[in-house]
Image (cartoon, rainbow, N blue to C red; front, side, top):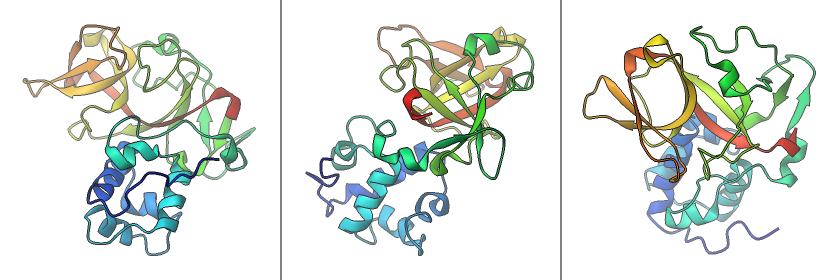
Length: 237
């Protein structure tokens, strides 16, 4: 495996802020993000605020645990996270029924979930439950079909979604699973969310530049909102 620290300037003042961006994109608190890797997890906040330097050992642990793209950490360009790598297979496994912190996997298409019901998983029985610690606070795993969200999420990859209860707090530019009522035709879709000049509305946009045109909906039409915390591949199940 290529050295995960190759080419990274750990002395850069941008490292901390990029780690914070990655953590926020996963919807995790400082404790949730750093506690699996360091006892004094509050030191993570100091690293993010450039009050403490990131050491080589901790940097390697964080990069490999969360599958962080080293190029993004070094330059701020490219995808924040890679797909789950084969060497993490031992930490990712499926179990036949709910237990502990496992998360349900639903083998359904988003188009099949398009309905007016507020709970899109209410009538769906999970195929199994997945235990993968970085995403164990999520609400569900779902497969993605099509290429509208490429390169963020490719066809056949599986997204881990976490329900957001406060739609006034949105990470603009990040991907969300949006569930709407009849005012938006009961649409269920994964899109990047952007601010609209009218604060009562939200802009939905595909990640794939080949999909031109934005969809604008009212905040009031959203009945459920889930942030996409990460993704895995089918062969990891």
